Image (tube, rainbow, N blue to C red):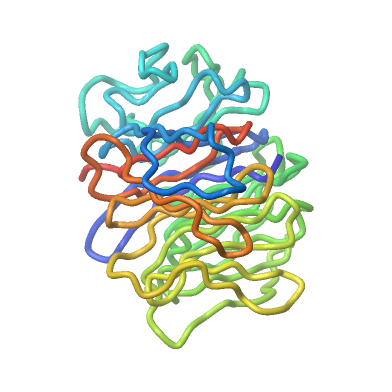
Length: 329
């Protein structure tokens, strides 16, 4: 099971909350879900993969470890739902725009706890029944992204000017200067932290102690978004320049270009749990599924009105790809 992560992305001139997947403090099994409609299939991709769309305004979603419940951020209200969208428990006030509404949220691996950031920047741990258990030390600004190591020993969060490393119990370790890193991920062995910097239009890598390791940049301004490590920790996928989807080996070697030159920016990317596939969403409302060798296997227009696929994630068993628009603002 790979490192889980969640993010809220902010683009110039517009605040957009987009959540991919996360494991906060306790290692979680999170994922997003959507609507089934394949326009292209190919040999090698399991034919029973479904796509479930949760709508334009859902900015994040996270599967419970059992895969039978899902945590929706941006739904009315945000909270825990069945997969057929029936509310189990609400985790925010009913009034829209409340400072106590959720901006990001995720399950613990045993499904008993939910970690969330509220719009007032408070980091809170809830029980799965919605009871508030404790609060954590917040950033000065809102959290843009968060991820936890596979062994659950440390977490990273990103905010407006810093990234913060945490111990598993929620104690801050150190802050790392990093401006507008809106998406973060941790490699499978926990040794590398990756962040997508909107300020520098680049993917940056740090060692787990916070020291800079490498930067992926391009000659063109990067308009893409999203970042994810493969489950084996050998590859990293990200949105790159010229609206591309790129896969780079961490040990060195050639970067594989899955997609390049389309008119609309990439808004989300995610490896499948077995590491064989990559799903990407973009601002044209189309979900694409690729083999890690670079073959386009499926192009999917999720059912329902969805102008942008701003959230993409896989269910823990890889049977469902979840999609959503990324938020209404």
